[in-house]
Image (tube, rainbow, N blue to C red; front, side, top):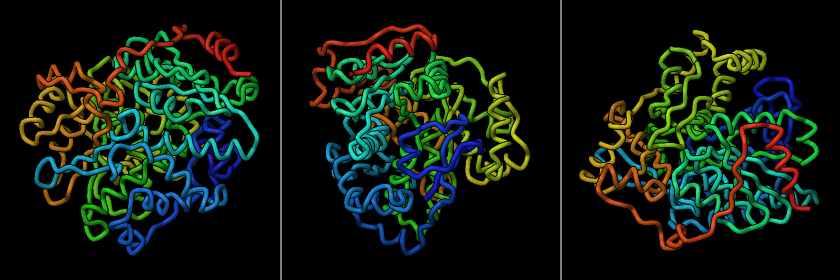
Length: 462
């Protein structure tokens, strides 16, 4: 199994090389050269299996010879050992034909744990075998950062630096990043929004002297291993509802497109997915683009669903690559146009995108109302991101096809918004009950590449 860049100019890499590299040296994102197929019988055989066994069967064809079967099974077992639900990703019914996929039972109460806990174990095995040390830098709109810190804290071969937008994450999200005491993890509060954090991260990868000097690695959703880990719960949940004998649809609250792109990969592998519905908040560049209005950046507007406050959705580049018939030159041209504001998508590519994706948008008022209404109708308390998904799913779902909406975070990560909507202030789980009492450790930093690189160089563990 080889991995190629969406921009067509970087060398093909193995799974392990692509994982450790993160962003391709031509600025593109790695995707599998071919997408492995699962037959009707392969998918049917997943029924009744543990989440870990499902993960092994779904991901194994993508791994190639980077890890042995025994290594990979052990990695998966360790990755999900600290989840607080034996099903890992359980389904709850909200209404007839509408189900909630709970992805918040991991260590940091967000869906990012499914990928980050796995990638932490993959990195540890690979780096130990290579005798190497790397510097991981990530950008976060809230949940990726805490998940990365939790996955890599205390590991000998890794230094972790997480950029998050100062004042634009919830207090719980911030404290999950700033309270770990491990010397190898560092929270950096950037003066700017998430798009600034993401842009500086890409700048660091494109500064080859810095990149090579600190052995830079990335664990944002630009990293293929992140996307791959998220493919698994599409299979586990769909099979629970009768796949492959019947189709299912998914609604995904998303800003950076990685979580729903994992669903696209599952569909390409053979999972009978009817529709993949992109749910956005008021920062709706994806909804506008999928509605035929082009992909043009606007101002990022702070919201009660801050993890979706994004104008440049990195993983959309992967979707464009397939929509443009895997034409790296075409994608590179689009990404150049994005630097000056945006681009229009060709008719053929729009038709390809429309074959798999639909989209909808939820306002702040609709999000708050959905939290209150869902609590009343089903007893389920939603985080604001999950509420965006539920609102859009209710608008667009086909009653004849089961709809699974991804619940991306625990409501306790956003207690102010949830209480405002429902009158209920969700408590943190017992293992996090003292989060507000833990001392914080954070560095405020200018939105300046040289300043960020200098800080990172000065903090790397010898």
